[in-house]
Length: 280
Length: 287
Image (cartoon, rainbow over the protein chains, first blue to last red):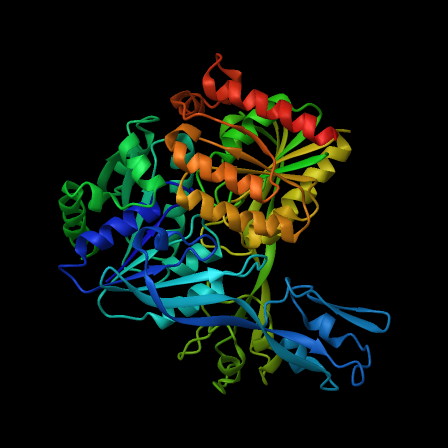
């Protein structure tokens, strides 16, 4: 089973839920943890993994051989991303716009375009607290997060229980993390921003056909609109985590709640029982 | 400085709350929401829509199964693994590059435009706003961000205004990079947690990569004095001017529930802190 912890809004507590769920289940189930928030991966702060393997993730960028190029402009015309342009006698390649599809190299009539690999980031695999752990890290300054998420999910394929920490938002990185999951566990907070972005995340999960359950974090602040919305939409709320300065300071220092407050372990184990019911 | 962008790296640190306060304080400005995945600024503003439209950001490969001869050349050429063993195109994996169209010997595949979101401009209690929303499950948020910025600049010219106050997205990827290009200053909003500090470091890396001046605000600073101290040290070591610190204050959420910025409500610790942060930013911006 693949459980993806996601949210529209950032900072609602995805990593807290994913990490504490993993730590509460790891002595009962064979689990695997994937941090797919490759722009800002934070689970390692709480799980302190030992990394065994680092593999670069690359895209192929076009490089033009000036001796063979006739400035015919076929490449610029073919490129759907505006990543290559003919300017007088030079060909400009905008690396950050290039998706690495290879069409320009195929279309070039004189074979003047070669492709060279360019590192977007890395996938790291290892172990944390006795279970397999993997994370992707996007290099600073790079725009394309999805190839790293795809590689991460491919490297860590497993038939067992996989817990995925997804990036916030509703765009392509979120889709890449959420796709083919058995459950979208959407973490939200009971505020107007939380509600607005929860609706967007529900839209994404439904479009992908992934069953949904919700967790309300910082319960007690804001208002009841998130709970009302979940009831109207038939989305089960499986856990409410109160706003608590003690929990906030554990988080600040990179400590897992279930380590410092062991009574939370049974709440997360009960959460998993409910997840099994919801997703079956 | 005619355009300021709020970024954070980590989500939920208070970018939009601070952008909302700057919306109250800044004169002659257009408000811009570049967090097209989860646009929230309008929730503080009572917008009434001036104009809106669909956004076609990318294309999608569409195959005519009737003329397909199952040669599988498209499967081999696609680097995004968007065409499966049954020769069906997955719209969530297709990037619309057209490589399959190029290799198809019988012209069975075409690129068709796809609507990936909508943009809008609105009049609000605190001034004009340009915003957008990505459709559920759609991609190309970076292009939509560029489009919103273009709409905001048009609005600024039309209404003869001077400034852009821009709310950005979390993370450091495509929508963030699209929002950073061309702005005059970035205000990074962080929180005193190890995650906040880790993400701040990466977000600052992106801002420096694009040579944009950056300033720092520590929100909810009293939730961990130890991490606030570490964040101050980080800022000092990296030449990142600290504009101020905001205490954790439930009044911020209470104002949000009413659909208002905290600084429009009665005086409170968080509102006062935001007021002095704005002053310091104005002083710094003049230099």
